[in-house]
Image (cartoon, rainbow, N blue to C red; front, top):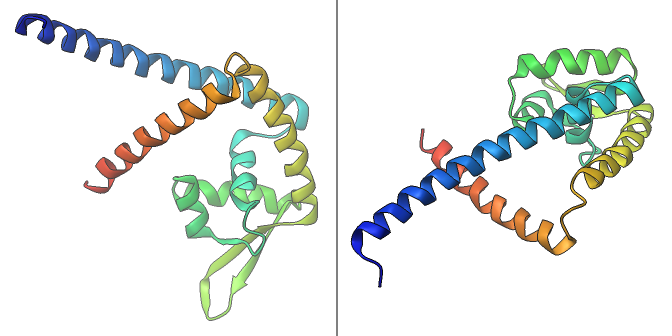
Length: 161
């Protein structure tokens, strides 16, 4: 059995190791995001926020209220409004007024938007698989489960504030 001072040292080392893990995750996530942003710009003349809005709308064929879209994306209504405005101008999404609520509208992908998103999503999957191909499917699944646990913990902390 280790001496009490060894346990304290291990705990301190564990804390520092976890901090380094967090910093590496952050750095890697930012690097992957940079690659995805550049690929979207180069291959589709698009942006990651546009892709994110279309990805959020994709499962909701009946559309989402702007407030719900903001909630799904975890950004402010103001941030989403500008992106949706540009997607509307490009014919990729439409806004439909909510009967009985002048201020609310539902946003959904148009056929053009769905086609563009499907193309972008297929390429996005390829890019991510190329970047993460050092992980087996089982390893990726294990990491996914572990990060889902951490995400749930962070959400609970967030909800208490």
